[in-house]
Image (cartoon, rainbow, N blue to C red):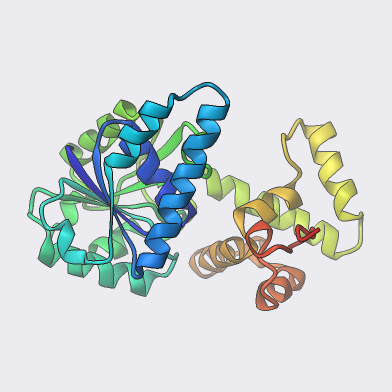
Amino acid sequence: MKKIAVLGAGIMGAGIAQVLAQGGHTVIMRDLQMTLVKDGLQTIEKNLEKGIAKGILLKEQKKIIMSRIHGSTDLADLHDVDLVIEAVVENMAIKKQIFAELDNLCSYHTILATNTSSLSIAEIASSTRRRDRIVGLHFFNPVPMVKLVEVIKGIDTSPETLEIARDFVQNLGKHPVLVNMESPGFVVNRILIPYLNEAIWVYGEGIAEKEEIDLAMKLGAGMPRGPLELADSIGLDLLFDSLQVFYEEFRDSKYRPHILLSTLVRAGYWGKKSGRGFYNYRD
């Protein structure tokens, strides 16, 4: 795994690219527009500057890490990479289109991974002719800080691909958790998202104010952050999309999003990234 491509230069894509470069890999970070790529590079630089300020990184190391990351808008630049990690929007149609293009472009030895948090690995793989070399690598935000990576086996993922993926994650200094069979949300989000949704229902029903709900879960359950704070941090749009996937897959009412969540999403109040969610971050 000498040369790796990351598709998407957003928060997740930039975080993954940073970790890969810190691990000594040559990285191509590709997005649709160069302005998006530049934003991603700036995000990485800011993260590394924080590391320097904390004394856990040297200025010389920052230069070396940044020199390993190459921005691009041309998918053709990915033709000779060993691994692609896709980290674009959580939309099945878009992911299948991308994987079909990658399948035609990349060498057959190239492993194609998706950072999806809830979508089917098998369905994404169905758009390719290399289903055995498609795997889920679910990093968590903030990528440089969180040690966990879920390594997800699709129905056709080969044992060899799974082993390569798990070893790769370990070599990055992360801790892989093997997901033996895909299911919406895999392990962490399968447990976490219903918890967040239930907190929204409690707030939406007027049982307690948002600050009280968050404080109750921090003091009473030992959570580092309250559920509504965490929902804002994740992104209410992403939470809503994941709940929709869960509800359509399981047809279980416990995954039905509260009308308050759907209203906030429609209004563009997506949490911290938009400046407002359950809390106001614009002040």
